[in-house]
Amino acid sequence: QLQLKESGGDMVQSGGSLRLSCAAIGFTGDYYAIGWFRQAPGKEREGVSCISIRYGTVYYTDSVKGRFTISTNNARNTVYLQMNNLTPEDTAIYYCASRKYYCSTDSPDFDSWGQGTQVTVSS
Image 1 (cartoon, rainbow, N blue to C red):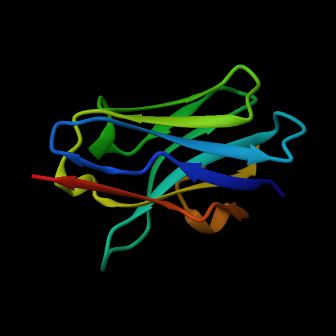
Image 2: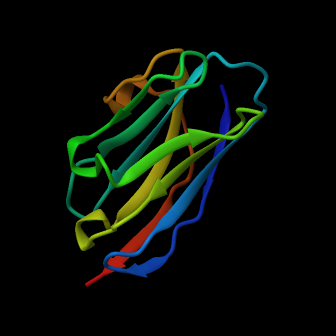
Image 3: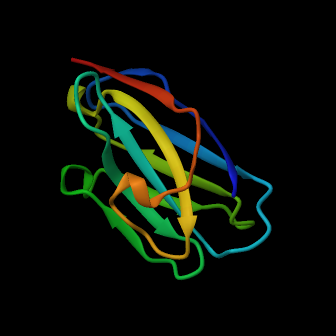
């Protein structure tokens, strides 16, 4: 299992941008998929985006398509989530998680999780 650490959360105004990072500690291969999830107070955890490191396939939930972009660094041990045109509805704790090979939208499919990073968007 990977150890994951998120960073980059902050407070921004509506329309602003943030880039979240997910560092994979102990990364030794490319056979992982990394997903970004978010959980707002009183709401279910939601799958936001996912990338399969080996196959390069990506996924976005409908509400972030065209605004968020998932990518990796050249070493493929850090996954980024570039978030543009943020709205108050994007306010949540954002988590990254890993599973083998393929993306999934279901959080129980992921076996390693980071501690989360807070994103707050003010109107």
